[in-house]
Length: 147
Image (cartoon, rainbow, N blue to C red):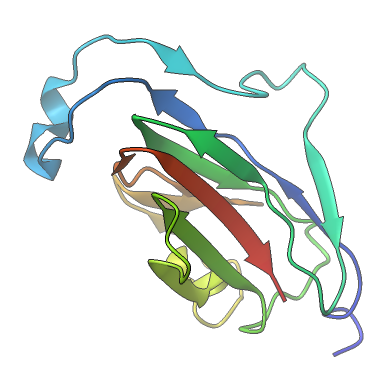
């Protein structure tokens, strides 16, 4: 628990394709160009860093729609032992309860928290977690990791 109660640095990278209709996962090989909003999209920019302790949630994204989250990236220090107590919550369209609520390591296909190599078209990780699930929403989206 020592490292788990320490600091987690979260860097969030969100790419939003505004006004894009939802698409089937089979259409990933036929993507069209569109408008994109990506805070901190370039490595040379100053990162968006958020720190949270053992009993705190942070809002890393509070987005207005209609839009679609197309990428989420969380970077953690290599020395951090991340367990199942770090929870990812995602709320859509002003819902009171989250539509996504699961351990962060489960969402990124690493239930043991060992930073095992995963490399798929929807999830990959190496010194961080990346997902490319298309997540459309109509009015509002909130992304909150917490412990």
